[in-house]
Image 1 (spheres, helix red, strand yellow):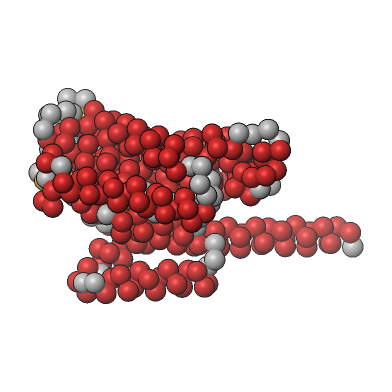
Image 2 (cartoon, rainbow, N blue to C red):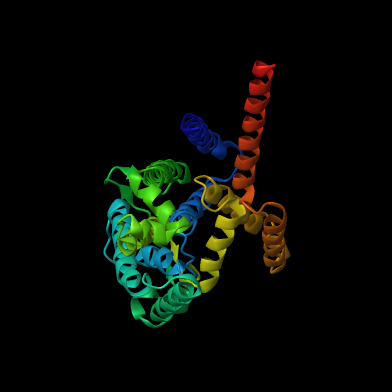
Length: 324
């Protein structure tokens, strides 16, 4: 079973790599970069919800802080893109530590409401402080030159850089999920009382996954600011927190590639159906209801369950044939 799971992950990474390589041939590179940024956002959120069992309604705070800090460092301080993205990611990690210490001792609806309240605090701070640009946001953020050599003003060049960061981060998330740390997280998610009885300090594990989740989300926001040369209040708005929940559930909570599929579905729907205005939200709601009713485990989760049942059925048939 472990060999089968490892082979499935390998195939999954192969498919992702192939899509990254062939994507710009048929799809606008900037749209693909948006998908990758939000896929990382959803993957970071899925670390907390899918593997940690904690539902946050405030992850837009870390995505937005990463975006704002990265944009400000690049525009006001003239930092190169790698330094600006690193600064945005570090800012999100610091905020994650602070908010995690406050919220992590609560669970269920109380944890969700605390994270929402803290995220709204960040929203109003970003609205009021002068360096964020208020309702106008930070516009015309320079993409700069990577390591002082590679000019990122070209969309295809930037696409290559974003693709590498995206793929490496996805590998890191996979390593975290399938490490002993990840196995303990799932044990805590499934039965915290048993994990405590085995001697695990569950609060520290929850805080660790919370911070790791915020780091990935802040990285996604920081890259998004460089890609679109913009950081705005939308990045820290509560609706962005709701979108990432939708992406994760539609794609498949607790799966490695589910958030990627969910992000692709939601971003593509917003892009290709933009002409119908606010009706896009109605369609997104319909997609969510359809997935909840027909695909309880999400798109990827349902496909994985079908694959496992098919393999089990074939193995059972082979065993019966051998006995007969």
